[in-house]
Image 1 (cartoon, rainbow, N blue to C red):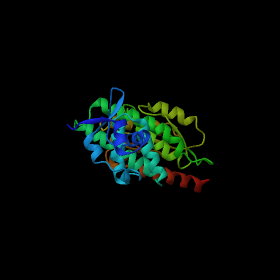
Image 2 (tube, rainbow, N blue to C red; image 1 turned 45 degrees about the horizontal axis):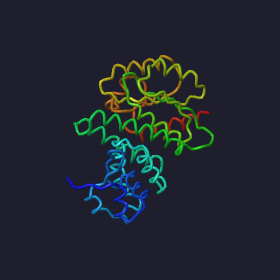
Image 3 (cartoon, rainbow, N blue to C red; image 1 turned 180 degrees about the horizontal axis):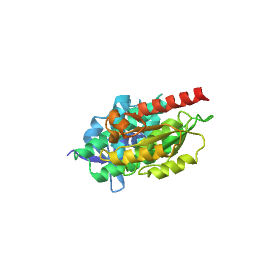
Image 4 (tube, rainbow, N blue to C red; image 1 turned 90 degrees about the vertical axis):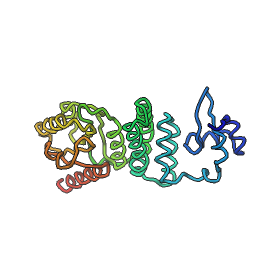
Length: 275
């Protein structure tokens, strides 16, 4: 293992102000670990570091890895700054959520599934991502006349909160009003809330649990029996193939976030033509 020096000494060796070196660390550009209340940098990383490279925004293709690193470190501010830097460089809300944050979270989930990341690390990354999204959401929401209301929820026995949180923000960036009930929502609660929204355009359901087909089918049947008069869009790994999703009940299955967004746009266009 190479020797390590404090971030203060690292800044001096790099010839930059301490806060500049700190910014490099918080945005994932300079590897560092926090120990004993201080940041420490490996001497080899200092030798391989080029300030001329990091003064520019990181390349888009490496940003997901940088975001992943900051999420696993529980670094809320660093994760957020990477995404804000991307937006400042011209990235759209779709690109930030789908091309940067999404792949970072997917890679963390994959590493957890093969044992490279512990449950504690995965939970820390998820909690950090939720806090980042809560701060990023107001920045991507688009003001103006609402295009309709969409109700989102995760089905019962599905405890992942990130899918609806990310979709919520992307829909708000398209000027939809969104009510997000979060994960593990009973079908009856979805129906009750839907009945309270007179201008409801559609319902979106997240299903990430692959062993939850019976609950998904019951949820769709409950919503169908309520005769709410609005389409239901469902997506996530839990629904399996689109054919299987259609067999579960009347719904519009989607296989990606972009497909879900397109489905809601089509629903809005159909409603506008009918009005």
